Amino acid sequence: MASARPPTKEADQRLTSLFAVDVRPLALPKTPKGQRRRAELLEAAARAFAVQGYRKVSLASLAAEVGITEQGAMHYFPTKEHLLVGVLDAYDLADEEGYRQATGSAETLIGGLLAAMRHRLEHHGQTATLISVLMAESVDPTHAAHTWFVERNRKMRGNVTQILTAAQSRGELRADIDIPTLAIQQVALFDGLVVQRTLDPDAFDVVEVLERFYVSLRP
Image (cartoon, rainbow, N blue to C red; front, side, top):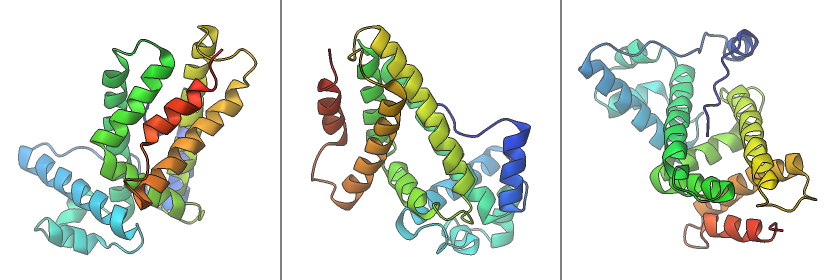
């Protein structure tokens, strides 16, 4: 899906007040070594946050994992909050590119939506688990990712509403379906299924469940 990072001044102010630091995107390192080190920190953080949650992980431990000092890590991410936002933004960018690729050959809009979800799970499964863990934690308004997830969910509901509206106009969905409500159900269903899959990976196929859901909504 499209990136959930809000570009507006008002949204930036909300983030700044929440984090007590400026967490708008940082400039990328200019050297290949710096870019590689930054990527290593993001990967280490994604793994650690997915297993332990955000609050139990320290910036020092992540720096040690990639072989640098905490001060060295702060050269790329001044605080753990910056690193968290970097992990989430990296996921959104990868997910956006995957969405374009996965939906390009789909015969229907609903098929494209399902293909994008399968791509997310198959190619970004660890980060999908991370999203589930952090989303549960971020219900607390003081959590570092709270505002990010509020904006992310609003963006996702808006994107899905647009897709489903177009699908309904093409005759892929029944005319009597309330699309904004269906979009809320879609986002909640996918996120909930990912949590269940995380707990019991072999219990069911997330996308197959969603396919059956949409079959029931055909004209």
